[in-house]
Image 1 (cartoon, rainbow, N blue to C red):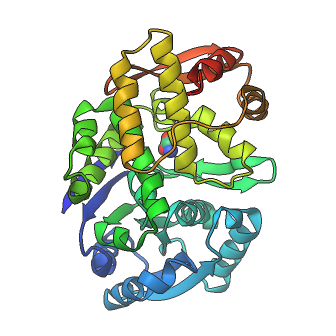
Image 2 (image 1 turned 30 degrees about the horizontal axis):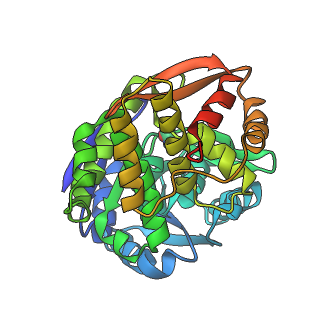
Length: 353
Ligand code: GLY
């Protein structure tokens, strides 16, 4: 088992290994005074792993209640949040008690935000069961729900008390969900680690998944330690995201987040090669890895459609835009520029040119 200690407004461990679900109770017990937990999960994940976690919590002396919601981003809304908060109140959870968020990114967000708000904040243990949640959303304390006006519009920065990444849970992931996690992993390689890109490029990559998760979490730890509130350096994690969000928005969120990120990275990297901002090798390795993991690197949407979607996002962020651009293999930089610069990137980055 690997232990990565995150130092932010709370210091906590991220444990990466196999067979961790059965240890959830014994690992949680020393971190909280109360002995009552609510396991929050969705109707896909709970049937697979709920009983194991429940038993582990009860064996460690916890009374456990379970709050379930329908799987999918559509549930990440105010209704589910209010139901969850009311559930905790009805089950008389106290400030000493703990939320166990068992599932993918939506569950992590809902569990984390509910825990952050209930009684002004109770402990939360994140148990991510998707690759994307392990390497990204469960670590770093971002919690949010969506509004009709946009994704992740209501939330907090609240760090969890512990994150358990049980690699065994990846076995049950549908291929497309595994692949979208790989998109975020490729992103980590592109923005900060040539060594990670080399591992992903090797034949034995899938066998090294535990090491890969540990590497990504370690990179995220370093970034979050510098900029917990996402005011500067943490924005490097948005490589592929500005364009990816626009693509997701245009497709009415009908594609996986990781697919949008993959397309966004492809478009940005091709544009940067054409602008001589990075060597062609960046595009070669990115394209090879995206193909290897069955991820797209371009979109059929027009520049006009994407600019319109990005403009809607821009309203939330002001006139300027911070783009994340590759400068060499395994290195990206932040580039603050006029919003209009995005149009040239989108045109140059189209694979059709
Ligand atoms: N998912 C990007 C971040 O945590 O900042």
